[in-house]
Length: 124
Image (cartoon, rainbow, N blue to C red; front, side, top):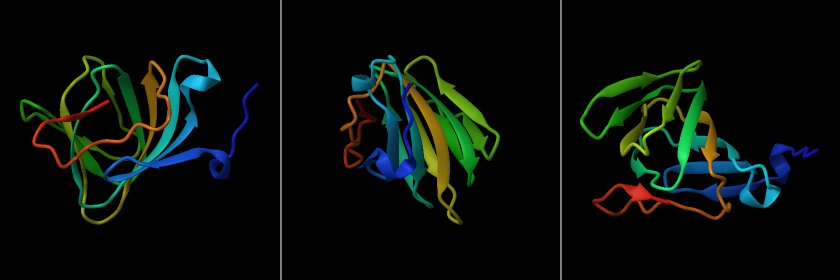
């Protein structure tokens, strides 16, 4: 059994927020679970070419926008899943941070960070 508290996990500044990584590749479960904060007012150009990701919003509001421009509002109680390694924009509204519980498959090593300075979609 694995039991972890928030103050015991690996925390990574992923580029536009913090990712608290509760489960990692080294845990042997085959997936990662994170508690991720997206800083208010940020826009992140993201793509996961080696991972599938599902995110469940627990705080804040924003939107996830497909590469084709289709926008989906995010608010507490909303889940979105990037089931096709979708290139996307993750946007947190100006008034508050967006907080997501995320699952990645396969699992992350734990040290991955985005390069948001590029004009391409940041990937890992």
